[in-house]
Length: 106
Image (cartoon, rainbow, N blue to C red):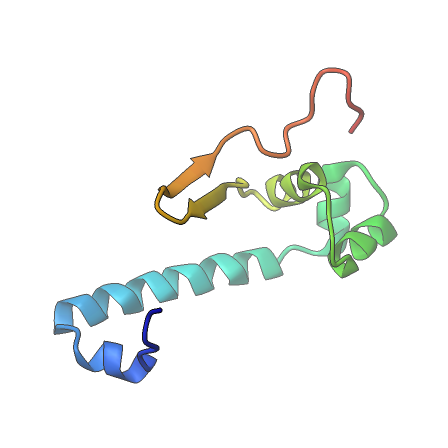
């Protein structure tokens, strides 16, 4: 079992360069989130070729098909990636997740 280490302790043990790298990455992630938040439901609906209430329903769902999530992310200008981490196996990225097959409907 791994011991829990307080985040403040982790930060205090980092070098200035390491803390600067963490701060830069956090700022980048926040900028990405802000960029997604600037899109209106109407803009996403237009890109997905659906009505705005459908986008509202997608946002409120607690469980989505990966294909729906992929389309939603792509409508916002992003790319969906799924990373899996298994004990003793390390982490790897699954590709083709949520892609629609030729027989599927959008």
